[in-house]
Length: 444
Image (cartoon, rainbow, N blue to C red; front, side, top):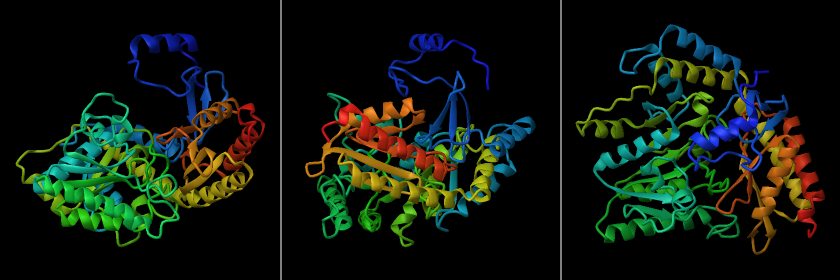
């Protein structure tokens, strides 16, 4: 166990003094000081072990030895500006492209999901010189200024700030709580028609669509699974208008959905985005990310005459780590594990739904699962306070889970991919006890 450098209270005091006050931490009224992690577990300064159900950054497991070794060995040998020729960059690009449809063949390596999505917007707006962007309600794409503009999850929190006139918000394709629900005869078409209507309105005002951007599965928006066929129809409308389709895989890529390596592939083999952005799991905690696009879009970007370079994106150490992550996913069959364990987790949760009226909906794919809590299953009244109570009670049981969605009432599972059947059993058992015993739910 790593030696504690500072007393926990001293760490808190220094954080309050030197770290920006808007930089929030988990369990703010009683934060956990984490000093070590391995696999799906995290450890505090006293050696207490916590089951990590939320850390989709440590994709193949915290501090995976193969990943650590790859990074350390390359760091001892060379790490330098990405403008020097180096094999790791091209070998990693080749390996990554092999997981994607053939037409997605050109990579730009950057350092974070935010940087990837910002570059994707630049590519899209340069493609035909169009400016207008369509995003989804409750979407989150990153923390830089260009992405706050297209992230209703964030800009709805700002008071008195005008929305960027080039940004247009389409309804989230949520078939549980959204405008068109599971009982609708064709929710995919209905939601896609909403995008078409936005395009028509933009054209009437003289605007031109650069891109539609969507998380392949909405995460911060509440673990939303779009109906199959939605992306295909949206892409048809957007491309007809001269725009392109950007699929944000920052939270959900690299086998998390189990059946496929990329979450956009859940829509079917006939759907291929024009740009895919990646981050978080790509480096298992190391800061790296990527934008992959078509040769046509890449050449249009080059035609602007502005050279593009990124000092650290795709550096030798980052690419060595990225290669190791891909190796571990295959070697340990983590995509298959996500399918098996995720299916088991959903089955367990469905049994809890039958038992506890507070659970309104269970939804997810692989190890990306949401549990929406409601006070009334007909009115869908969000059980926000109850969701927070579950989170804090689980913390007492040494299980780390979080709640999200526009109403903060969706418990979200997105653990490291080494999560086991036994881990799922334990987490759901504790949730069952909390929903059964906790006084806040005595009315159910």
